[in-house]
Image (cartoon, rainbow, N blue to C red):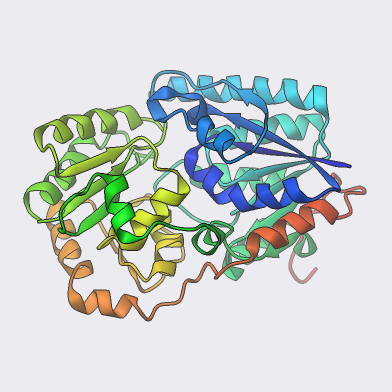
Length: 386
């Protein structure tokens, strides 16, 4: 049997991997090793390993590397601890293939350990661009350490080959997270509002704001201004999920909890909603606001408007249902009026999602299970036209 290890360190990442994990678990030719770490093991971020286990997955190993601080030194320490944990597992278990998704620092740590252990890596969501965060460099670094690549658009596939990866090892099947939209039995509107704690008929928006890790400031004041406008200047309920465990993430959480205490009943904050509740929340919301990739990748499939704020997602391919603005308060106000206008809402009903429709997860899992791994560690730099 082919031993395939899949690593997840965050709630969002797990949601994107969910159907791939299900297909691998069902494949009798594969032995799935699910590696769980970081935010999944933290009460502060919802202890989401419980959701993974409730979904019926056996967690093969836990990597406990998260340092209780959001300063750069603590992030570096978390990277070191994650590398140690991954190195120990890889040396002991020697999987045939390791699957990593995205661009977070813990994925980089696990990739480094796998490179040294001579374990081939399959990387999902390479070739993308997020110019406002360190994830930009991390993503491309993981690409160069990987041996199989699964991109979410044709343009991203071209970027991976531009980095010198052999085209025959780069596959564009679309974004696997889209499969959740069509594969999960999402909640109806009444169920969704009850789960979110919204008990009147006023509309709501989904607002998620993560740190911009390439900036020196912690953005807490900017975040507070944007959130205060949404609370005081609009008639919407605000559904919020916590920021990730990035540099300055805890500063944003402190601001969120402070403002939340000042406006009881208007802000509905959650450490983690899980894929089913989160996607249900997007399905029935007025708009997705903030700087999460879900507003760009998943929201268009619901024909829901997205207001993308600041530079965190700068460089990503965006559908017409996504409007980008700076984090300047006056620009944010005007952009928010636009995305919630009847004209923009109607236009969104006609958009197509550039990240695909569904079926990516099954194709990815099948290729992971069957791709010939003979001599896969030996890579040649691809030069177009040579």
